[in-house]
Length: 312
Image (cartoon, rainbow, N blue to C red; front, side, top):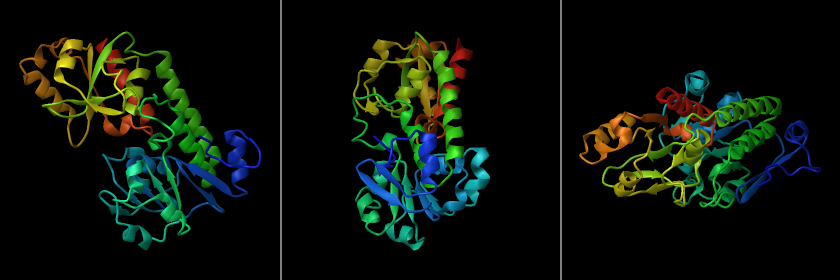
């Protein structure tokens, strides 16, 4: 999916430089919008969108943010504190309109559902641009096709071009790519199987073949026991986990289901406690926000790889 619609095919750096002097058209999922100038009243919806803006130093162009999954990292906390929080989850459309925004940046497609803010085109008709992070665009990324790291790199480039900060975006792309490639070149989980555990007790909620969490595990060298299941997040049966007897258990740290609670549940269960990984204490943990293709994705990969190295 091309993010820029310019007069000639250009590389990211050249495209961004040109975009600072002329209009930029963003093609986001199944919608597009032409920005005549850089937005100055942006609102972010979902944490990964917020953190892209903060990483690019664009908090001054934000008039609101919403929907955090967990804490903002320390390096962006002061910048985040300067931006009004409009709602704990998605704000009502009336609340958004009251801020007179010129750009809405969302992390999940649910932001632009009819139950929340409504379709992107509705906002375009009002002269308000929108952007949905590329990894969340279902038409661009079918549930049976594994994600790569390219979507977050494209997001950084797109936002950098629209806001006229492409040099900073290029540097951030280079840094993010280098960190991920460093882990890929030396994966501590190579040759090991893993059960990725998000939540649930009666039925474990785990990962499928093709989302961000699967890419975290794969980049660190792990072979997920549910890599053959279509989708990003899926329900598994405990019988499948027991039969696979994975080498490692990767716990997703989330406010709705902590890693400590999940580990305690497995250690107390008469059957699950007999798994090799449980018996040997071979658990690793990653925060939910670090499994999304956002600015903390490289953190998640590095975190998992370091813990696997320590186990080894």
